[in-house]
Length: 532
Image 1 (cartoon, one colour):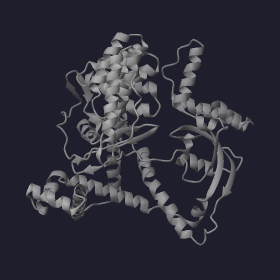
Image 2 (image 1 turned 30 degrees about the horizontal axis):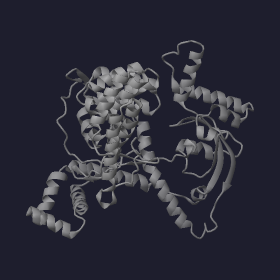
Image 3 (image 1 turned 180 degrees about the vertical axis):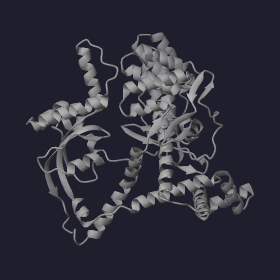
Image 4 (image 1 turned 90 degrees about the horizontal axis):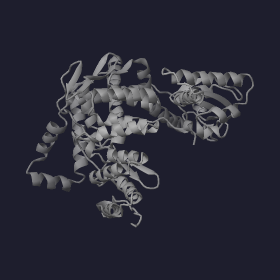
C-alpha cells in the first residue's frame, strides 16, 4: 500500500491514569503472533518525581556531563528534572532498550506541546476559575472511584475492610492523587483551547459538495534520506569519499526539481516514477495512487493535488515524507443521490471529521511558528533519526555517549546504527560498554544483540556467553522475554548446545501454559514448536 494512504495520526501515547498510580497489564509492547502487535502504553500520574539535579550549566556526576536543560521552546526552557518526571509516566523503566529512544522522544514532544498549548491559551485570553478547578477535581474523583470500584458491593467491601467512610475515601483520593490543582488547571486550559479551535471549524455548502469530489492522481516522491544514500553510493562507485556536509534535504529538492523539469519538457511521468520514486508502494504502478477524497492525504499534498485539473502537474510539494511531484489524471463527483434530502446529516459527518483534524493541524502550526531547539545531544539524535537523518543522529549520539558513558540507551542505539552501516566491530565495542554497566548487564535484549554480533564475527565462545546471559535476564513473563527465549532456542541448537536449547523449550512451554491459564480469558493460545 502506498505510504500516501497513511492518514494523519495523534502522537500522544495511550494512557490509563488513576491519580498518581497506574493500572498495569504487562509490558508496554505486547507482540502477538501472526503479525499482530498489541501495544499497551500504561502511564501513571505523578505530581512529583525524584529529586532533580541542580540547575546549572551542566550536571557532573560519575563522569556524566549533560546539560541541565534538554530543550528550549520559544525562549522557555525544559529542565532535565522536568523531562525525567515526564519520562516516569511512560513506563520507561520497564520497556525494552530498543523502544526507549522513541519513548524518550515522545516524552519530550509532550512537554513541547504542553508549553505551546499553554502559551496559545494565554494568547487567546482563556482563563480557568478556581471553581472550575474544584468541579473538575470532583469529576475526576468520581471517575477514579468508579474505575476502581465498578459496583456498590465492591465499594462497600473495601470500606468495611479499611474501616473508613465514603467521605474519608474521597478525601484520601483528593489528597494522594488529585492534590496538584495547578496540573488540573492546566488541563482545563488546554481543554478550553481545543474546544475553541474546534468551534472555529465550519463547513459551507460549497465545501460540503467539494468533500464528495474524488481525484485520481499519481506522484513521484523523493525522500531526503534515500537521495543522500544514492549520492553517497555514486561517490563510492567512483572510489571517492562523499563530502561530510551533504545536505540531504537540499539534495532531495534538487532531484525533484530536475525531474519536474524533465516532465515539463515531455518526459513520461509514469516511467520517471518507476525509476526514481521512493514511494515503493506506488512506484511499480508508475506512481498511481488511485482514487481518493479530501481528508485522505496529508494536508500539503492534498491541497496541491485538489487544486489541479486533469492532466496538470504540480510544482514540487514538500511534506513530512519528502518532496513530491503530483499529476492529476481524472476527477469526478460522488455526490450521494440523497444529498439534498440529508444534507445536514452529511454536513455533521464532515464537520466531525474536520474537527478531528483541526487540533493536530493547530499544534503543527504552533510548532512552525515557534523556534524549538533540542539542547540534549541524545534527544537531538533521536529526533534526527526519526527524520531519517542518520549521519546527524550518529554524531549526536556519539556526543551523548561521550558526555555520559553510562547512558545505555544512547550507546545501544548508536551500536545498532553502526551495525546497520556494516561496522560490526564498533557496534560490539559499544554493546560491550553497555553490558559493562550495572544497568546494561541485566538487559536481556542488549546481551542478545551482542551475542548476534559476535556470532557474525565468528567469535562463537563469546557469543555463547552473551546468549547465556540473555537467557538468565529474560525473566519477565511477557512477550519481549518470550521472543528472546524463542530465538535463544535456535541459537543454542546452532551452537550445538542441546541441553541449553532444551531449557529454552521448557521456558517456552511454561510461558504458554501460564498464558492459557490466565483468568478472565486474558491469555492467548500459543503453539510452541516441539523441542528436538
